[in-house]
Length: 96
Image 1 (cartoon, helix red, strand yellow):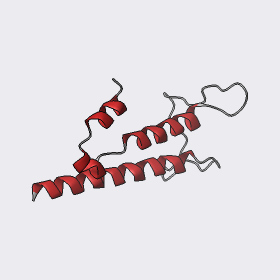
Image 2 (cartoon, helix red, strand yellow; image 1 turned 45 degrees about the horizontal axis):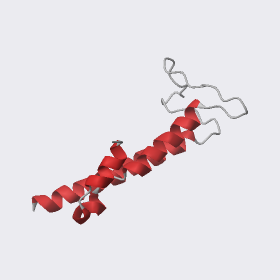
Image 3 (tube, one colour; image 1 turned 90 degrees about the vertical axis):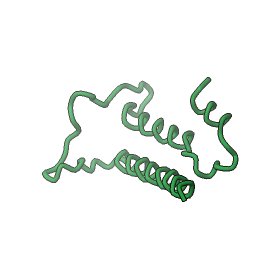
Image 4 (cartoon, helix red, strand yellow; image 1 turned 30 degrees about the horizontal axis):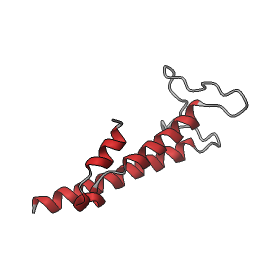
Protein backbone atom coordinates (compact mmCIF):
# COMPACT_ATOMS: atom_id res chain seq x y z
CA UNK A 1 0.00 0.00 0.00
CA UNK A 2 1.31 3.45 -0.89
CA UNK A 3 2.11 5.70 2.08
CA UNK A 4 -0.38 8.46 1.15
CA UNK A 5 -3.17 5.93 0.78
CA UNK A 6 -2.17 4.32 4.08
CA UNK A 7 -2.45 7.72 5.79
CA UNK A 8 -5.85 8.37 4.24
CA UNK A 9 -7.22 4.96 5.22
CA UNK A 10 -5.95 5.17 8.80
CA UNK A 11 -6.78 8.82 9.48
CA UNK A 12 -8.82 9.45 12.64
CA UNK A 13 -11.71 11.74 11.60
CA UNK A 14 -11.71 13.45 15.01
CA UNK A 15 -8.14 14.65 14.47
CA UNK A 16 -8.24 15.15 10.69
CA UNK A 17 -7.55 18.89 10.84
CA UNK A 18 -4.25 18.21 12.65
CA UNK A 19 -2.78 15.75 10.15
CA UNK A 20 0.08 16.85 7.94
CA UNK A 21 -1.15 17.40 4.38
CA UNK A 22 1.06 14.72 2.86
CA UNK A 23 -0.41 14.99 -0.63
CA UNK A 24 0.14 18.77 -0.85
CA UNK A 25 3.74 18.47 0.34
CA UNK A 26 4.40 15.63 -2.08
CA UNK A 27 3.05 17.76 -4.94
CA UNK A 28 5.29 20.70 -4.00
CA UNK A 29 8.30 18.37 -3.87
CA UNK A 30 7.41 16.99 -7.30
CA UNK A 31 7.05 20.50 -8.72
CA UNK A 32 10.41 21.51 -7.22
CA UNK A 33 12.06 18.39 -8.58
CA UNK A 34 10.70 19.12 -12.02
CA UNK A 35 11.79 22.78 -11.86
CA UNK A 36 15.31 21.92 -10.72
CA UNK A 37 16.06 18.82 -12.74
CA UNK A 38 14.33 19.29 -16.04
CA UNK A 39 15.34 21.94 -18.55
CA UNK A 40 12.66 23.45 -20.78
CA UNK A 41 12.37 22.25 -24.33
CA UNK A 42 11.33 19.23 -26.36
CA UNK A 43 14.16 17.04 -25.00
CA UNK A 44 14.34 17.56 -21.23
CA UNK A 45 17.64 16.68 -19.62
CA UNK A 46 19.22 16.80 -16.19
CA UNK A 47 20.64 20.24 -15.39
CA UNK A 48 21.15 19.89 -11.63
CA UNK A 49 24.51 18.75 -10.35
CA UNK A 50 24.42 16.86 -7.10
CA UNK A 51 28.17 17.20 -6.61
CA UNK A 52 28.74 20.87 -7.42
CA UNK A 53 27.12 23.41 -5.07
CA UNK A 54 24.90 26.07 -6.58
CA UNK A 55 26.61 29.46 -7.08
CA UNK A 56 26.16 31.98 -4.27
CA UNK A 57 27.01 35.62 -3.60
CA UNK A 58 29.31 36.91 -0.85
CA UNK A 59 26.48 36.55 1.70
CA UNK A 60 26.15 32.87 0.73
CA UNK A 61 22.73 33.51 -0.82
CA UNK A 62 21.77 31.88 -4.14
CA UNK A 63 22.25 34.07 -7.17
CA UNK A 64 19.01 35.57 -8.43
CA UNK A 65 18.89 34.20 -11.95
CA UNK A 66 15.35 35.11 -12.85
CA UNK A 67 13.80 31.71 -12.30
CA UNK A 68 11.35 30.98 -9.53
CA UNK A 69 13.03 27.92 -7.97
CA UNK A 70 14.11 29.82 -4.84
CA UNK A 71 10.56 31.11 -4.45
CA UNK A 72 9.24 27.56 -4.77
CA UNK A 73 11.66 26.35 -2.11
CA UNK A 74 10.47 29.15 0.15
CA UNK A 75 6.87 28.10 -0.47
CA UNK A 76 7.77 24.53 0.50
CA UNK A 77 9.51 25.53 3.72
CA UNK A 78 6.64 27.87 4.64
CA UNK A 79 4.21 25.00 4.08
CA UNK A 80 6.34 22.67 6.23
CA UNK A 81 6.27 25.30 8.98
CA UNK A 82 2.46 25.56 8.75
CA UNK A 83 2.14 21.78 8.94
CA UNK A 84 4.44 21.63 11.97
CA UNK A 85 2.31 24.27 13.70
CA UNK A 86 -0.75 22.05 13.18
CA UNK A 87 1.03 19.11 14.80
CA UNK A 88 2.26 21.32 17.64
CA UNK A 89 -1.26 22.64 18.20
CA UNK A 90 -2.54 19.06 18.35
CA UNK A 91 0.08 17.88 20.83
CA UNK A 92 -0.47 20.95 23.02
CA UNK A 93 -4.20 20.31 23.00
CA UNK A 94 -3.76 16.64 23.89
CA UNK A 95 -1.18 17.33 26.61
CA UNK A 96 -3.59 19.56 28.57
